[in-house]
Image (cartoon, rainbow, N blue to C red):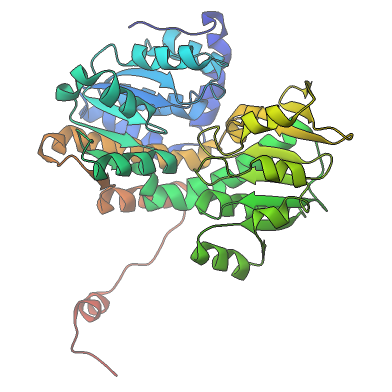
Length: 418
Protein backbone atom coordinates (compact mmCIF):
# COMPACT_ATOMS: atom_id res chain seq x y z
CA UNK A 1 0.00 0.00 0.00
CA UNK A 2 1.08 3.60 -0.50
CA UNK A 3 2.32 5.72 2.38
CA UNK A 4 3.66 9.15 3.27
CA UNK A 5 5.57 9.33 6.55
CA UNK A 6 8.52 11.28 7.92
CA UNK A 7 11.32 8.71 8.23
CA UNK A 8 11.21 4.93 7.82
CA UNK A 9 14.43 4.57 9.84
CA UNK A 10 12.47 5.44 13.01
CA UNK A 11 10.63 2.11 12.83
CA UNK A 12 12.64 0.23 15.48
CA UNK A 13 11.94 2.88 18.10
CA UNK A 14 8.27 2.86 17.18
CA UNK A 15 8.04 -0.92 17.39
CA UNK A 16 9.46 -0.99 20.91
CA UNK A 17 6.95 1.63 22.07
CA UNK A 18 4.04 -0.18 20.36
CA UNK A 19 5.01 -3.36 22.21
CA UNK A 20 5.13 -1.46 25.52
CA UNK A 21 1.61 -0.14 24.96
CA UNK A 22 0.36 -3.61 24.04
CA UNK A 23 1.36 -4.89 27.48
CA UNK A 24 -1.22 -2.53 28.95
CA UNK A 25 -4.03 -3.33 26.51
CA UNK A 26 -5.17 -6.83 27.56
CA UNK A 27 -8.76 -6.53 26.30
CA UNK A 28 -7.62 -5.63 22.81
CA UNK A 29 -5.10 -8.49 23.01
CA UNK A 30 -7.91 -10.96 23.72
CA UNK A 31 -9.90 -9.59 20.79
CA UNK A 32 -6.80 -9.79 18.58
CA UNK A 33 -6.31 -13.45 19.47
CA UNK A 34 -9.92 -14.25 18.51
CA UNK A 35 -9.66 -12.18 15.33
CA UNK A 36 -6.51 -14.06 14.36
CA UNK A 37 -8.37 -17.37 14.63
CA UNK A 38 -11.77 -16.37 13.19
CA UNK A 39 -10.75 -13.72 10.59
CA UNK A 40 -14.13 -11.91 10.80
CA UNK A 41 -12.88 -8.95 8.75
CA UNK A 42 -11.45 -10.97 5.86
CA UNK A 43 -10.96 -8.72 2.82
CA UNK A 44 -12.63 -5.68 4.43
CA UNK A 45 -11.08 -2.36 3.42
CA UNK A 46 -10.90 0.15 6.29
CA UNK A 47 -9.78 3.78 6.17
CA UNK A 48 -9.01 5.19 9.62
CA UNK A 49 -8.45 8.82 10.61
CA UNK A 50 -7.13 8.58 14.17
CA UNK A 51 -4.31 9.95 16.30
CA UNK A 52 -1.25 8.02 15.14
CA UNK A 53 -0.03 6.79 18.52
CA UNK A 54 1.18 3.54 20.03
CA UNK A 55 -2.36 2.69 21.17
CA UNK A 56 -3.79 3.29 17.70
CA UNK A 57 -1.06 1.06 16.29
CA UNK A 58 -2.33 -1.81 18.42
CA UNK A 59 -5.87 -1.20 17.17
CA UNK A 60 -5.02 -1.17 13.46
CA UNK A 61 -2.80 -4.23 13.86
CA UNK A 62 -5.73 -5.99 15.56
CA UNK A 63 -7.93 -5.12 12.58
CA UNK A 64 -5.28 -6.49 10.23
CA UNK A 65 -5.12 -9.73 12.26
CA UNK A 66 -8.87 -9.99 11.65
CA UNK A 67 -8.26 -9.96 7.90
CA UNK A 68 -8.81 -6.27 7.14
CA UNK A 69 -6.83 -4.11 4.74
CA UNK A 70 -6.16 -0.92 6.73
CA UNK A 71 -5.08 2.55 5.65
CA UNK A 72 -4.41 5.17 8.35
CA UNK A 73 -4.09 8.95 8.45
CA UNK A 74 -3.81 11.39 11.35
CA UNK A 75 -6.80 13.12 12.94
CA UNK A 76 -4.64 15.98 14.26
CA UNK A 77 -1.49 17.52 12.72
CA UNK A 78 0.37 17.58 16.06
CA UNK A 79 -0.58 14.18 17.46
CA UNK A 80 1.38 11.95 15.08
CA UNK A 81 4.21 9.91 16.59
CA UNK A 82 6.52 9.60 13.58
CA UNK A 83 8.30 6.50 14.86
CA UNK A 84 4.98 4.70 15.27
CA UNK A 85 3.98 5.63 11.72
CA UNK A 86 7.30 4.26 10.47
CA UNK A 87 6.85 0.95 12.29
CA UNK A 88 3.33 0.46 10.94
CA UNK A 89 4.65 0.86 7.40
CA UNK A 90 7.83 -1.21 7.79
CA UNK A 91 6.73 -3.94 10.19
CA UNK A 92 3.00 -4.26 9.44
CA UNK A 93 2.85 -3.21 5.77
CA UNK A 94 0.04 -0.76 6.47
CA UNK A 95 -0.71 2.35 4.42
CA UNK A 96 0.06 5.29 6.72
CA UNK A 97 -0.31 8.93 5.69
CA UNK A 98 0.82 11.11 8.60
CA UNK A 99 3.67 13.41 9.63
CA UNK A 100 3.85 15.40 12.83
CA UNK A 101 3.46 19.11 12.09
CA UNK A 102 1.50 18.79 8.83
CA UNK A 103 0.02 22.06 7.58
CA UNK A 104 -3.65 22.20 6.57
CA UNK A 105 -3.04 21.24 2.94
CA UNK A 106 -0.86 18.26 3.85
CA UNK A 107 -3.37 17.18 6.50
CA UNK A 108 -6.22 16.92 3.99
CA UNK A 109 -3.97 15.43 1.32
CA UNK A 110 -3.19 12.65 3.78
CA UNK A 111 -6.89 12.08 4.40
CA UNK A 112 -7.37 11.65 0.68
CA UNK A 113 -4.36 9.32 0.60
CA UNK A 114 -5.99 7.09 3.22
CA UNK A 115 -9.11 6.93 1.04
CA UNK A 116 -7.27 5.77 -2.07
CA UNK A 117 -8.06 2.11 -1.50
CA UNK A 118 -11.84 2.77 -1.65
CA UNK A 119 -12.87 1.80 1.90
CA UNK A 120 -15.91 -0.21 2.87
CA UNK A 121 -15.69 1.04 6.48
CA UNK A 122 -14.46 4.39 7.80
CA UNK A 123 -13.10 4.97 11.28
CA UNK A 124 -12.98 8.53 12.57
CA UNK A 125 -11.81 10.69 15.45
CA UNK A 126 -13.46 14.04 14.77
CA UNK A 127 -15.41 13.13 11.58
CA UNK A 128 -12.90 14.70 9.15
CA UNK A 129 -12.72 11.48 7.12
CA UNK A 130 -16.50 11.20 6.87
CA UNK A 131 -16.90 14.88 6.00
CA UNK A 132 -14.27 14.52 3.27
CA UNK A 133 -16.08 11.53 1.78
CA UNK A 134 -19.41 13.38 1.88
CA UNK A 135 -18.00 16.57 0.33
CA UNK A 136 -15.07 15.84 -1.99
CA UNK A 137 -15.09 12.05 -2.43
CA UNK A 138 -18.77 11.31 -2.96
CA UNK A 139 -17.92 8.67 -5.56
CA UNK A 140 -16.83 6.44 -2.65
CA UNK A 141 -20.18 6.58 -0.84
CA UNK A 142 -21.87 3.68 -2.59
CA UNK A 143 -19.10 1.31 -1.57
CA UNK A 144 -19.15 2.15 2.15
CA UNK A 145 -21.29 0.00 4.45
CA UNK A 146 -20.69 1.97 7.65
CA UNK A 147 -18.34 3.86 9.91
CA UNK A 148 -17.35 4.47 13.51
CA UNK A 149 -16.68 7.70 15.42
CA UNK A 150 -14.36 7.97 18.40
CA UNK A 151 -14.91 11.38 19.96
CA UNK A 152 -17.62 13.74 21.22
CA UNK A 153 -16.90 16.46 18.65
CA UNK A 154 -17.24 13.99 15.81
CA UNK A 155 -20.52 12.60 17.12
CA UNK A 156 -21.91 16.15 17.35
CA UNK A 157 -20.97 16.77 13.71
CA UNK A 158 -22.48 13.47 12.58
CA UNK A 159 -25.77 14.09 14.37
CA UNK A 160 -25.91 17.45 12.61
CA UNK A 161 -25.44 15.63 9.29
CA UNK A 162 -28.16 13.15 10.22
CA UNK A 163 -30.64 15.92 11.11
CA UNK A 164 -29.92 17.63 7.80
CA UNK A 165 -30.51 14.38 5.91
CA UNK A 166 -26.91 14.40 4.65
CA UNK A 167 -25.54 11.23 6.29
CA UNK A 168 -25.24 8.62 3.59
CA UNK A 169 -24.21 5.58 5.62
CA UNK A 170 -24.65 4.32 9.21
CA UNK A 171 -22.07 5.37 11.80
CA UNK A 172 -21.62 3.82 15.25
CA UNK A 173 -20.98 6.43 17.96
CA UNK A 174 -18.17 4.64 19.77
CA UNK A 175 -17.73 7.74 21.95
CA UNK A 176 -21.13 7.17 23.54
CA UNK A 177 -20.36 3.65 24.72
CA UNK A 178 -20.28 3.44 28.52
CA UNK A 179 -16.92 1.68 28.39
CA UNK A 180 -15.59 4.62 26.38
CA UNK A 181 -16.84 7.95 27.67
CA UNK A 182 -17.11 7.03 31.35
CA UNK A 183 -13.44 6.02 31.38
CA UNK A 184 -11.52 7.38 28.38
CA UNK A 185 -13.12 10.83 28.44
CA UNK A 186 -12.99 11.29 32.20
CA UNK A 187 -9.88 9.47 33.39
CA UNK A 188 -7.88 9.50 30.16
CA UNK A 189 -8.43 13.15 29.28
CA UNK A 190 -8.05 14.21 32.90
CA UNK A 191 -4.64 12.62 33.33
CA UNK A 192 -3.23 13.28 29.86
CA UNK A 193 -4.28 16.95 29.84
CA UNK A 194 -2.48 17.60 33.11
CA UNK A 195 0.48 15.61 31.73
CA UNK A 196 0.60 17.81 28.63
CA UNK A 197 0.40 21.05 30.61
CA UNK A 198 3.21 20.00 32.94
CA UNK A 199 5.48 18.76 30.14
CA UNK A 200 4.95 22.00 28.22
CA UNK A 201 5.40 24.42 31.12
CA UNK A 202 6.97 22.67 34.13
CA UNK A 203 4.77 24.84 36.40
CA UNK A 204 3.50 23.93 39.86
CA UNK A 205 -0.26 23.40 39.90
CA UNK A 206 -0.58 23.39 43.69
CA UNK A 207 -1.88 26.77 44.79
CA UNK A 208 -2.69 27.93 41.26
CA UNK A 209 -6.06 29.19 40.06
CA UNK A 210 -7.18 26.76 37.38
CA UNK A 211 -10.16 27.50 35.10
CA UNK A 212 -11.89 24.70 33.17
CA UNK A 213 -14.24 25.84 30.40
CA UNK A 214 -17.00 23.25 30.17
CA UNK A 215 -18.11 20.39 32.41
CA UNK A 216 -18.75 17.49 30.09
CA UNK A 217 -17.06 14.17 30.75
CA UNK A 218 -13.66 15.32 29.48
CA UNK A 219 -13.78 18.63 31.34
CA UNK A 220 -14.84 17.07 34.62
CA UNK A 221 -11.90 14.69 34.40
CA UNK A 222 -9.57 17.67 33.97
CA UNK A 223 -11.18 19.50 36.89
CA UNK A 224 -10.89 16.47 39.17
CA UNK A 225 -7.21 15.95 38.35
CA UNK A 226 -6.34 19.65 38.74
CA UNK A 227 -8.07 19.68 42.12
CA UNK A 228 -6.10 16.59 43.10
CA UNK A 229 -2.87 18.40 42.24
CA UNK A 230 -3.76 21.15 44.71
CA UNK A 231 -5.15 23.80 42.37
CA UNK A 232 -8.16 25.98 43.17
CA UNK A 233 -10.52 25.05 40.33
CA UNK A 234 -13.29 27.14 38.76
CA UNK A 235 -15.68 25.83 36.11
CA UNK A 236 -17.49 27.87 33.46
CA UNK A 237 -20.56 26.43 31.74
CA UNK A 238 -23.58 27.32 29.59
CA UNK A 239 -25.64 24.26 30.62
CA UNK A 240 -27.45 24.79 33.95
CA UNK A 241 -27.46 21.07 34.83
CA UNK A 242 -23.73 20.68 34.27
CA UNK A 243 -23.04 23.91 36.14
CA UNK A 244 -25.12 22.66 39.07
CA UNK A 245 -23.27 19.34 39.04
CA UNK A 246 -19.91 21.16 39.07
CA UNK A 247 -21.05 23.20 42.08
CA UNK A 248 -22.23 20.04 43.87
CA UNK A 249 -18.87 18.42 43.10
CA UNK A 250 -17.20 21.20 45.07
CA UNK A 251 -15.91 23.47 42.30
CA UNK A 252 -16.32 27.21 42.00
CA UNK A 253 -18.76 28.01 39.19
CA UNK A 254 -18.70 31.42 37.54
CA UNK A 255 -19.03 33.19 34.21
CA UNK A 256 -15.90 33.28 32.10
CA UNK A 257 -15.80 37.08 32.27
CA UNK A 258 -15.48 36.71 36.06
CA UNK A 259 -12.92 33.94 35.76
CA UNK A 260 -10.74 35.80 33.23
CA UNK A 261 -9.03 38.16 35.75
CA UNK A 262 -9.06 35.43 38.44
CA UNK A 263 -7.36 32.50 36.70
CA UNK A 264 -3.72 31.62 36.26
CA UNK A 265 -4.34 28.78 33.81
CA UNK A 266 -7.28 28.19 31.43
CA UNK A 267 -8.25 24.93 29.72
CA UNK A 268 -11.05 24.73 27.15
CA UNK A 269 -12.93 21.47 26.70
CA UNK A 270 -16.32 22.35 25.21
CA UNK A 271 -16.32 21.35 21.53
CA UNK A 272 -17.43 24.87 20.63
CA UNK A 273 -15.79 27.85 18.94
CA UNK A 274 -14.29 31.08 20.37
CA UNK A 275 -14.95 30.10 23.97
CA UNK A 276 -12.06 32.30 25.12
CA UNK A 277 -12.03 35.48 23.05
CA UNK A 278 -10.91 39.10 22.82
CA UNK A 279 -12.67 40.48 25.92
CA UNK A 280 -11.34 37.62 28.03
CA UNK A 281 -7.76 38.19 26.85
CA UNK A 282 -8.05 41.86 27.75
CA UNK A 283 -9.20 41.01 31.28
CA UNK A 284 -6.57 38.34 32.01
CA UNK A 285 -3.63 38.92 34.31
CA UNK A 286 -0.03 39.05 33.21
CA UNK A 287 1.33 35.52 32.82
CA UNK A 288 -2.00 33.76 32.17
CA UNK A 289 -1.57 30.40 30.42
CA UNK A 290 -4.10 29.13 27.85
CA UNK A 291 -4.55 25.67 26.38
CA UNK A 292 -7.18 23.53 24.71
CA UNK A 293 -8.31 19.97 25.36
CA UNK A 294 -11.11 19.98 22.76
CA UNK A 295 -10.69 18.18 19.44
CA UNK A 296 -10.35 21.20 17.15
CA UNK A 297 -8.20 24.32 17.57
CA UNK A 298 -11.19 26.70 17.51
CA UNK A 299 -11.99 27.05 21.21
CA UNK A 300 -9.40 29.79 21.82
CA UNK A 301 -9.75 32.75 19.45
CA UNK A 302 -6.13 32.72 18.32
CA UNK A 303 -6.73 35.20 15.50
CA UNK A 304 -7.99 37.79 18.02
CA UNK A 305 -5.02 37.11 20.29
CA UNK A 306 -2.66 37.66 17.37
CA UNK A 307 -4.40 40.92 16.45
CA UNK A 308 -4.17 42.19 20.02
CA UNK A 309 -0.50 41.34 20.47
CA UNK A 310 2.39 43.74 19.87
CA UNK A 311 4.92 40.93 19.81
CA UNK A 312 5.18 37.15 20.04
CA UNK A 313 7.89 34.54 20.46
CA UNK A 314 8.28 30.82 21.11
CA UNK A 315 9.61 30.64 24.64
CA UNK A 316 9.55 26.84 25.09
CA UNK A 317 8.85 24.04 22.60
CA UNK A 318 5.08 24.17 23.18
CA UNK A 319 4.77 27.63 24.76
CA UNK A 320 4.20 30.77 22.69
CA UNK A 321 4.32 34.16 24.39
CA UNK A 322 2.02 37.00 23.25
CA UNK A 323 2.78 40.53 24.44
CA UNK A 324 -0.37 42.61 24.77
CA UNK A 325 1.12 45.98 25.72
CA UNK A 326 1.72 47.52 29.10
CA UNK A 327 4.07 44.66 29.93
CA UNK A 328 1.30 42.04 29.99
CA UNK A 329 2.07 38.66 28.49
CA UNK A 330 -0.23 35.71 27.78
CA UNK A 331 1.06 32.23 26.99
CA UNK A 332 -0.59 29.85 24.52
CA UNK A 333 0.28 26.15 24.62
CA UNK A 334 0.61 23.95 21.52
CA UNK A 335 -0.94 26.52 19.18
CA UNK A 336 -4.33 25.88 20.73
CA UNK A 337 -4.40 22.26 19.57
CA UNK A 338 -5.07 19.24 21.75
CA UNK A 339 -2.67 19.76 24.63
CA UNK A 340 -2.63 16.12 25.73
CA UNK A 341 -1.49 14.88 22.33
CA UNK A 342 0.56 17.88 21.20
CA UNK A 343 2.68 18.24 24.33
CA UNK A 344 2.33 14.71 25.74
CA UNK A 345 1.47 11.22 24.47
CA UNK A 346 -2.30 11.24 24.83
CA UNK A 347 -4.31 8.85 26.97
CA UNK A 348 -2.61 5.98 28.77
CA UNK A 349 -2.82 2.62 27.02
CA UNK A 350 -4.77 1.13 29.93
CA UNK A 351 -7.80 3.31 29.24
CA UNK A 352 -7.48 3.27 25.44
CA UNK A 353 -7.68 -0.51 25.76
CA UNK A 354 -11.45 -0.22 26.29
CA UNK A 355 -11.97 2.57 23.75
CA UNK A 356 -10.22 0.67 20.98
CA UNK A 357 -11.87 -2.61 21.97
CA UNK A 358 -15.11 -0.75 21.19
CA UNK A 359 -13.72 0.27 17.81
CA UNK A 360 -12.63 -3.25 16.91
CA UNK A 361 -15.92 -4.87 17.91
CA UNK A 362 -17.96 -2.09 16.27
CA UNK A 363 -16.15 -2.75 12.98
CA UNK A 364 -16.87 -6.47 13.35
CA UNK A 365 -20.56 -5.60 13.95
CA UNK A 366 -20.61 -3.47 10.78
CA UNK A 367 -18.97 -6.23 8.77
CA UNK A 368 -21.81 -8.55 9.78
CA UNK A 369 -24.75 -6.17 9.80
CA UNK A 370 -23.79 -2.97 7.98
CA UNK A 371 -25.79 -3.52 4.80
CA UNK A 372 -29.02 -3.82 6.80
CA UNK A 373 -28.64 -0.65 8.90
CA UNK A 374 -30.23 2.75 8.35
CA UNK A 375 -28.16 5.83 7.57
CA UNK A 376 -28.18 7.21 11.12
CA UNK A 377 -25.84 7.62 14.08
CA UNK A 378 -26.13 4.38 16.05
CA UNK A 379 -25.22 3.45 19.62
CA UNK A 380 -22.69 0.74 20.35
CA UNK A 381 -24.79 -2.41 20.89
CA UNK A 382 -25.28 -3.06 24.62
CA UNK A 383 -23.87 -6.58 24.37
CA UNK A 384 -20.56 -5.17 23.08
CA UNK A 385 -20.41 -2.67 25.95
CA UNK A 386 -21.00 -5.42 28.52
CA UNK A 387 -18.52 -7.80 26.91
CA UNK A 388 -15.76 -5.17 27.02
CA UNK A 389 -16.49 -4.46 30.69
CA UNK A 390 -16.41 -8.20 31.42
CA UNK A 391 -13.09 -8.66 29.64
CA UNK A 392 -11.57 -5.64 31.40
CA UNK A 393 -12.59 -6.97 34.81
CA UNK A 394 -11.19 -10.38 33.87
CA UNK A 395 -7.87 -8.80 32.90
CA UNK A 396 -7.77 -6.99 36.26
CA UNK A 397 -8.44 -10.17 38.21
CA UNK A 398 -11.76 -8.81 39.53
CA UNK A 399 -14.74 -11.11 40.05
CA UNK A 400 -18.31 -9.88 40.53
CA UNK A 401 -21.52 -11.46 41.79
CA UNK A 402 -24.31 -12.87 39.63
CA UNK A 403 -28.04 -12.73 40.25
CA UNK A 404 -29.77 -15.78 41.71
CA UNK A 405 -32.79 -17.23 39.91
CA UNK A 406 -35.00 -15.71 42.59
CA UNK A 407 -33.45 -12.27 42.13
CA UNK A 408 -33.95 -12.45 38.36
CA UNK A 409 -37.62 -13.41 38.85
CA UNK A 410 -38.07 -10.54 41.30
CA UNK A 411 -36.61 -7.97 38.92
CA UNK A 412 -38.74 -9.30 36.07
CA UNK A 413 -42.00 -9.19 38.06
CA UNK A 414 -44.41 -6.46 39.07
CA UNK A 415 -46.52 -8.42 41.55
CA UNK A 416 -44.08 -8.50 44.45
CA UNK A 417 -44.28 -5.46 46.67
CA UNK A 418 -43.96 -4.55 50.33
